[in-house]
Structures are given as C-alpha cells and as structure tokens.
Amino acid sequence: MPFTFRPSQALRLLSDFSLAQVRDSDADLSARQTAILLTIYLEPPPHTVRGLAAKLGVAKPVITRALDAMGKLDLVTRRRDEADRRSVVIQRTVKGALFVEKLGDMLIETAKDLPA
Picture (cartoon, rainbow, N blue to C red):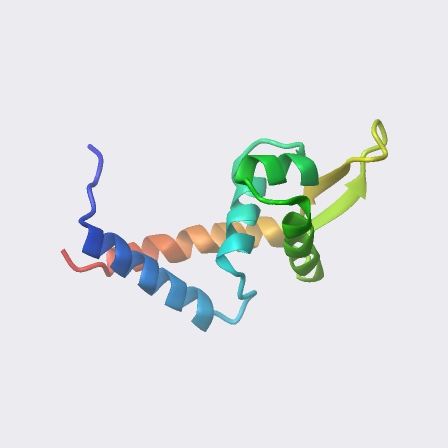
C-alpha cells in the first residue's frame, strides 16, 4: 500500500532531511551534487559525464564541477574509457557507497519523526 504525503508533509520531510544533512559531520553536498551522486549509485553503470549530463538535462561542465567536488571527498572517481578515449567513466567508491547508504538511513529516520 503506497504512502501518500500531503504537500506540507513532503516539504517538512525535505526540510528536516536537508537540516540533518547540514548538521551531519560528513560531506555537505548541494542538491545538484546529491542528485548526481544518487544517479551514479542507484542506476546501473556504466556512467559517463556525457550520459549523466543528458540524463539530468544539464551541461557537461555542470557534471564535471560536481564530480570535482565529489572526487575530492572520495565519493566517486573518474577514468578515461579505454575503448573511447574521449569518454570519461565515473566509478563508484567504497566511501561513496557508504555515504549513499547513510543518506538512506538518515532519510528513513527523518521520515519516522514526521508528524501525522
């Protein structure tokens, strides 16, 4: 049975979850970076800069800047595609997988505290 949120509940969940992310001592990602990271970890690979840009409807430099920031945090890595040297393949990391899992746990905990 699907759960239906009222708009005010959905916004409260988003607000509380965003605050939980900001208060957390781990990486503080922007909404754009979070969307890119979740796409990389929740959808089957391979992922490329070009493919992510097309899927998310943004320019390749937007993806590149986000990947730069996430790479510094060791949430993803990049490598040239050996079959097509023009293409950059995005790879998952253990730290990134743990971070995404923690986000899921955080969202569940936040939803538990949502007023009825």
